Length: 192
Image 1 (cartoon, rainbow, N blue to C red):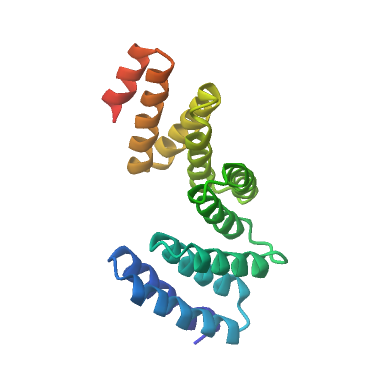
Image 2 (cartoon, rainbow, N blue to C red):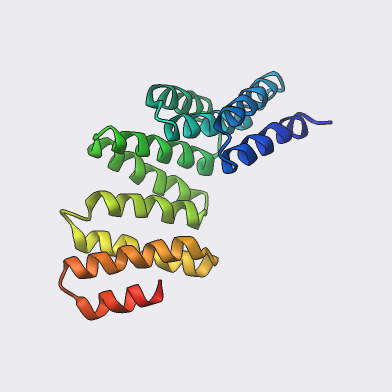
């Protein structure tokens, strides 16, 4: 069994426990997998598991631990050619920044994440971070936010991502309402 195969089970278990809402077990499996990845010399897998652990810690409100794990993942990824994973980790750091009220840093991170996803040719990762950016700027720059939402919508439709499509349509409708463009808002809401 290769190192990648050895680490695949803890990654799968961690994600499964996350989706089942069993966060303690998710973190436990992530740390088992991280140690296996470290011993196997697989820094990208180690970073992925750190990212999962950081994401879960953030979902549970432990922002200090979340930032620590995500920063560790960034450190591991700096010298690797893995732009999609680095984009994911930096995007997750942006979420923590936004939750802490540091919108400037969140915007910088999400912009960086969008560029990394573009480099990796990963349209949904790019779209998700554009949606984060749009939510952040919607109050003071609704036209630019609308552009981000429409871009997100286009990607969601082309990728068949119904949940992302519905979210983007709802956000498009909200911006149209804010701009007084009620007919367009109704059309967007009707498509949700």
